[in-house]
Amino acid sequence: MAHMKNLRELKFSRSIVKKGHWDAVATLESLEILDFSVCTFVDGPADVDPDKRLTVKVPCLSVHGCNGYPQLLAAIDTRHLRTLTMDLEFADHVDWLSETALIELRVYDYDIKRLTMASPTRVKRLLCQMPQSIQVLRLPFRTFSEIDESLFVDPAWKTMPLLRSLTLEVGRGPDIAPMTVARLVCDGIRVLRGLRSLTLNAWGPHLDVEVSLVDVRDTIQEQLIDIPGLNFVQIHGTAVRLVYGEWMDI
Image 1 (tube, rainbow, N blue to C red):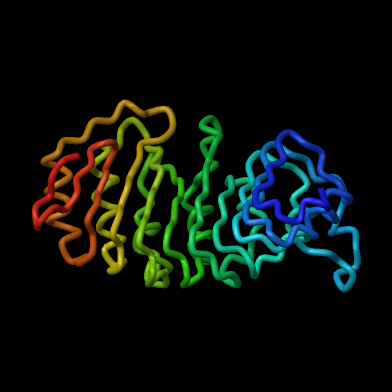
Image 2: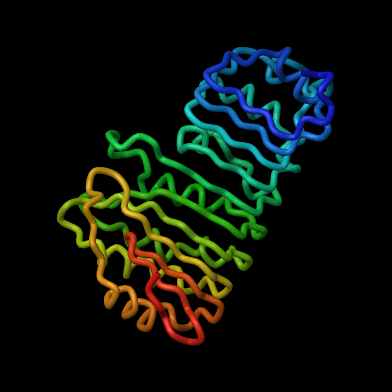
């Protein structure tokens, strides 16, 4: 691996990643994308004195279903990250987002059985770390028995002036109407004046969601009209795009 100096993309899948792997990856000066899927990090940079530690400088990192996060966290030079894709398990170990110059952040919740996974508390923790440089954001959250309205009036939304694209994966309880959640979200994110694209997707056990075109258009006119650059909205599969001043279905 160390001889492949021009390698731009590297993926580890169901692998046991050791110190030798990290030492080799750290020499790949052209590496742009590093992906770990269902891997175990058994030893490496975390076992080395920080002053002697080799770190990986890569702009795009993806982490899903892994174990042994301290090794991974010690290996990555976060100052170089621009795109980060991760699951909630890894996100729980991340406390440095605000120190990065991230442009894109995508967080996934792959476990639809554990009801506490994408809780508002965990989502708020991520929001509080969000760097001002963020332009593309994807987050999961769940509202099962009741809606936590504080999530959508959190001051952290106001600290993302460059945000252009927001995708929320919405897990909701059977007694909560899909448009109830959608309107609450829209009321909170109207502070994102630079937003151009908004997507709310149904997620989890209640995927049989139908939202009318009229509901989507009404929500835009009533709650999102003050966002000047907004030109795409999708709510639970019903999508509209702004064309010559008119919201047209897609």
